[in-house]
Image 1: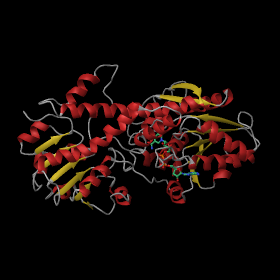
Image 2: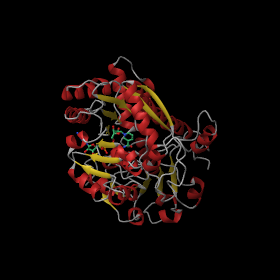
Image 3: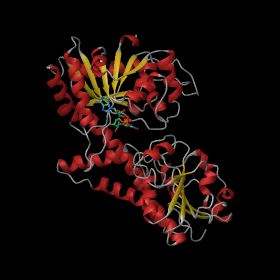
Image 4: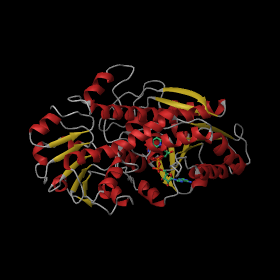
Length: 469
Ligand code: NAD
């Protein structure tokens, strides 16, 4: 019975809340822990504190209806009462790119203090993205010091990286491609594999809930692969670095295509994506990647590599090409309009991708920064991220937020399409005619260039050579 296993998840942010909710939905008793009392109060009301599709009904169900998930700031006592703790605290970038491990260390100390008070064996699982060696050299050491117990005896230790995507996190947690377990010892690995097998039952099983078609699929146990702690830590960085590399690769080719008359990067992506060795995912050229993971994780593994004596050349290029894409958006406008000072820019889309209100390292920030430094005024609209943008000190108060797409476009000299929300995909050339000069820089290539040009929009897009079109 899953209800016999008591789980604590420490760090009720994006990853922690989704992880906690899915375990709770499958019958485990879960306590989600955080130092932020505001988040705790929101979750205990059955609500969420960030925008994520499909999460609100799930949180309501597991907190208010099933009563399998509670949130608490009583960290040590809650861990003491549980059997396993997942560490999901943040690991942000430091100035030099390295991974800031202060929250991990704090959590490990709290877990150690709780384990000291326990008689029973306790399993600790690091889910946060942490550089190789962190679980063994920091988490294990801190827990041993605080608890007075030894890893492998008084407590078990694993590292299991998280691969969910913001905007699809509930789906990704219910249907993961694979589960990676890094284990300190056999007992820890066996116990965690057993817990995941209960979550994703071996035999075919249906999640009890069935809303929005999301759970209306049979859940098969995904492949569970077990390695050392360091290998699991490294897999996460290799995974994100590879995906970021794919994006920068297609953006590099987009820059080449712009210099070849009549060649479109979208056709190139289609042509290579059908090769099964490449596949079509992450081959959309555009304004560059952002978010809470790719930029920070690539920088963190680069810093780690340098510290252990290797200069990562491909990864440096991935970062350089990505930085160039935001500049390219502004260059495209300058190629159309010349000097941008005193002109009005409309920015459509602020979040780093559709389906989230997350503004962390969003390309919109880099683009808006440049537009402001060139003396432009900026008005923006986003269906979900405007509140987050207002809080962001980089741009917060420096731009105007429109009440509608129409208001954002009206009277603007140039429009930058930065995030490919569905709301923008349906816009017609007519919609842009309310601009002062209908100049459109399509940073996500969602519009048909030929049609927009034909219908009087001065269209430019990332990765398309338009001279003879
Ligand atoms: P987040 O910033 O949304 O949440 C972190 C939470 O930890 C916050 O609520 C914070 O208050 C809490 N916290 C900080 N110190 C604490 C402590 N000592 N005890 C308890 N709670 C504490 O972070 P996130 O986006 O959920 O990411 C968490 C980890 O997962 C990071 O390492 C990240 O790289 C990784 N990850 C994130 C994603 C993603 O899409 N967001 C995907 C995969 C992996």
